[in-house]
Image (cartoon, rainbow, N blue to C red; front, side):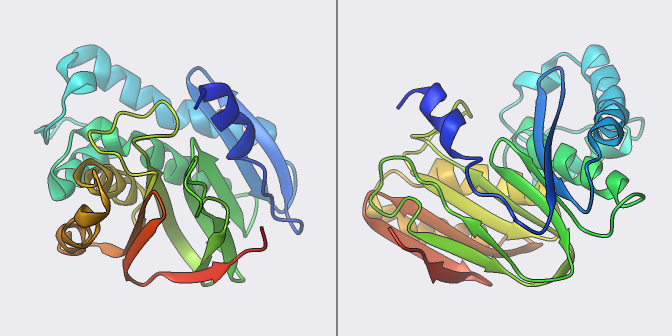
Length: 243
């Protein structure tokens, strides 16, 4: 599956009650829903969130390539500390948490301008919503792709992050078509989704992989899809969608 196909499909669904707009700074490319268009404000928030991370990376070049938990040290800025803690809890490198961390950082910054916000960063989502929301699960060529949605309650802050070994450019050591984790901490949801995806190579891995992720403190629920098989654990409410 080409990256171009993936790029066209994973942003197809939008929430009709929100203004939908894009915000891009360097590698950060967000689709955002809010009560009104806030593209300029979102760009400013991306800069605010990226700047301390970029400074830390410049001073610690091994950080970007680390595939194991990283000791960030007391000098680390808050966004880096959150990524390091998420990686430690999930047993993965800190960059496995970067998309979720930035999505939450930007989303919480935008709450100064809107009471509801949905920030999507490469398939990783942070949202604050006064009503339930539905997140469609895209799983590449799996027959279960786009056939169900995760139903989320009204929330003051929730991360829903997805990793895949068959879709998109993200690094995964597994073959899951989709590995999705829900947490109140979007950085942790992102890191744990990577950990879940790394463990799934076939349908036989679904149960032990979900059991392993269920032991991560702060993970509320998880699901994984490989081929025509799906496994789920925890606070995951699924709703079938019409083909």
